[in-house]
Image 1 (cartoon, rainbow, N blue to C red):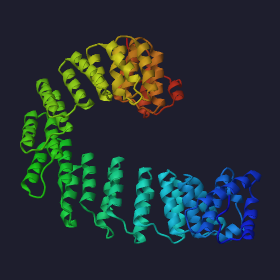
Image 2: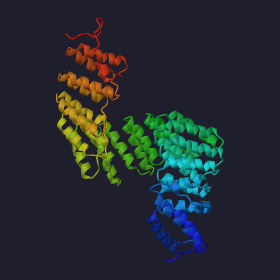
Image 3: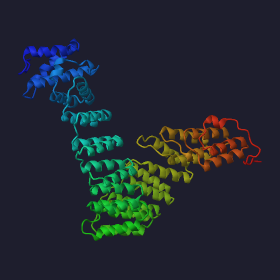
Image 4: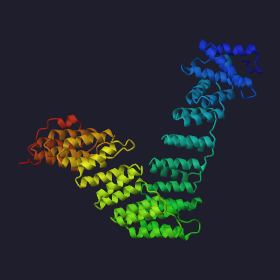
Length: 561
């Protein structure tokens, strides 16, 4: 196989090969030799010598990666590794070999040890690949090198960096990137700010998003658009701060921004969340009176939801009828909201009628639909009907969600059907996709304790913890009282101690209930210890609880006769 080399003589080739291949063993020489021949015969570029050089260096990088690039020295390499060659090597390591970490190692080695001044193209390709591969610490270091070398990211790379670091949860560095861009007069496109604000809101960092948005409004380096306002308004409405959202809404005009249907939908939804459905309806009428845009299904559904939350199903039905007359087709969410509203109002006839309308409209029910119907039946005392619907959910290959289980388990426990509730917990245990909450287990634990079966209650707690669901205050209170009722005071003390150890501070109900049980059992000393624990902030260690505290003669805890 003949080498495709046009600009290097044989003597030059061997002057290059000998010092480089000297750092690797005999096998590496064979591999590199075969690799060079294969690479060069298939080189797509006209400059075969550069292609040859890139592929040899890339091959040696791959072989040296198992140890270190620290011995990767050569005068020929030092003198002939240009920024463009380095770029091609890095691009090859990234793309062909999918090894971003090795590409970074080569970049850092050549920069620090061979004094290569890398091009902006190299920085861009490295930053993109490292972010995509999740090497954010390395990407941060490359960015710092980039600034030291006098390079600035363009708007595209900046957007990628901000988004990637924000997705990784490093919002502080994302803000730093934006700050640097402002100081360096790098163009920051609106979608970069909007994407950053959206990620903050999605991570429930609404106040931080609003604060950042406030800085945008006061600055001179960016003029927000309608989308920017919408993100901040949606975030505020999500956390119930509707009046602050209206303040932003009223400021839009001063920034030459006009509200759109998304703006109104966010505000109406926010008003519905805080129980101000009438104000939401007023905004709907405001949209209808304008000629710029029309209310959509989200607008109507948000108003309907507001009235459903208030239990005003007559008004909710009226808005639904108005939506149909206006030619807006209801969505799955619209039907689910209505079915849930009728169910909570105890009107299962209307709930079922709405379900039938839903099917007639070609809208397929989901697990939320059935859960709302199950909840309605359980509220009406028809638990068996709810259980039949659960069978239909399973028959449709729809997985019951955490609320489906919670509703049925709680309803069964209210009817003292503990064994059936226990069976549902066993089904839940098989669902690896659900991390349940304590409110699902507590009714069963309570039912078992009231029946005197504290042993089985402890088994349920163990299953609960196996599902990575930590007991809450109510769980511990139920267990403490349950064990006390069985005369197991020592076990109750152990449970109370564990409660403190895991950082679950008992409330007044827990403390008073336990003290009452201890006094009835003729254990005033232990009752005093529990009360002292409450006085001292409920932060005592086990050793503190168990220490021997003498009973004072003027102790204000009555002793049971």
